[in-house]
Length: 127
Image (cartoon, rainbow, N blue to C red; front, side, top):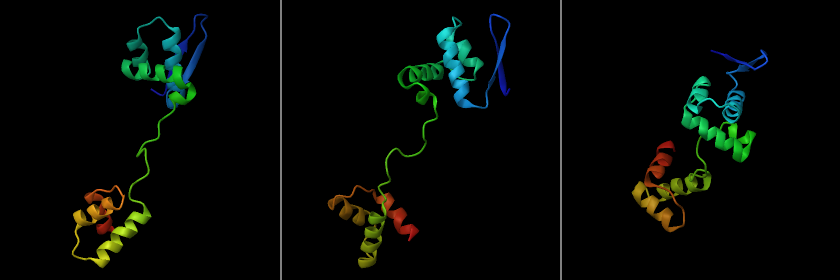
């Protein structure tokens, strides 16, 4: 189903494009606020659970349109594997070929860099 037809009290109809997630969420929130129907029924009509519908309703009240937009996916912070850290790892391995990933990670941690031994291993395998 690509569209949802909403009929008003005066016999007028309005079509909602369900392919547009922002419009779909807004129309659901609008109906949750204005309608006396059960929330679960309204949310199901738009393809959401009652819990998700309540989350969008809360987001609408707190942030308005921004609350209904998709959230960026992926890491929230910058990777700890910066170019400088990668350069240091490769340099340490080049100077001391006997040092393993745990030794390099320990040395970097003592120098103030927070990086796991597994991340050190990834850098070494890439170079």
